[in-house]
Amino acid sequence: MFFLKKEKESEKTFHHELKKTRESFFSKIKNLFLRKSKIETNVIDHMEDLLLSADIGTTTTIKILNNLEKRIQKEKYKTTQDLYDHLKKEIENLFIDIQNECLEKKIKYHKKPYVIMMVGVNGVGKTTTIGKLAFFLRKKGFDLIIGASDTFRAAAIDQLEIWANKAQVPLIKQHMHADPASVAYDTLQSAKSRKKDVVLIDTAGRLQNRIGLMEELSKISRVMKKIIPESPHEIMLVLDASTGQNAFEQVKKFTDFVKISSIVLTKIEGTAKGGVVIGIMDQFKIPIQYIGTGEKIQDLKEFDGKKFIDCFFEEKNNER
Image (cartoon, rainbow, N blue to C red):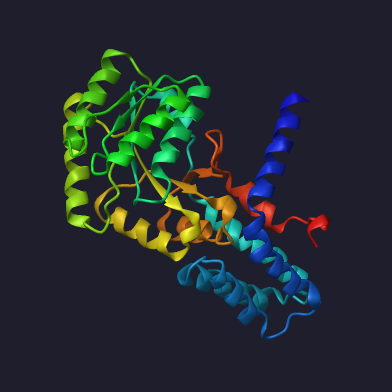
């Protein structure tokens, strides 16, 4: 009974956190369908406008609408409710083939320490996310250490130290403008000697200097391999959901020079652009591991694609 209650509370909270996206987009889709019972020729055009307005992206929008039009021709749908149900199914299908292996399981069954490199441009909430993730994993019973390899900004080191203290996780740091790879090296050495389960490595987010950033990330990886040959085991990209299409561009640029294992989507509770999740999953086939849902240290949740879609399409009488 306790676990059922916790699951219902989690779904309720998830539903609340995605309220802005649902009300701005998916409720409009449903209202469009509910206004008329029969499928009209212009309903696809209206759907295209709404899909694009949610920052799902042109490529994914075209894919969804093409599949819907084929269904209409093949199965002769007569009502908009039929079309509405299939729209949900089409969006669900975009998530099916993307394996989102639980990070906790990967850590548990991998040789320790498990090294996670955190990447993302400045301003997306990367430092905050590292603190939240450290807190989340510590609550799951893992022993962690954090490395402050974003030495480009003094504020980054100070902010990370604040979050590390909140999470009660030790931090390895040096001075501003220190060699980021040196910090990573010291962190992994410390992690091995202290038998830590997980290492979180922060990195700089100067994407405007792509060549310099690429070289820096490559150097950090090379140096870490001297301590742990297969590291980093995970490269996690942090994105700000509220930036919409800009988030697509960030994924494109980072995947040009580093292999992204998973994504953390932040600030999703404050945006109407949650449809960006659908486009990213479809176009890049990179699993979304967590979503940030607030400013508090506990405001990080595991991403569940089915719940994500269900919360948009389910009936909520009190929101009409």
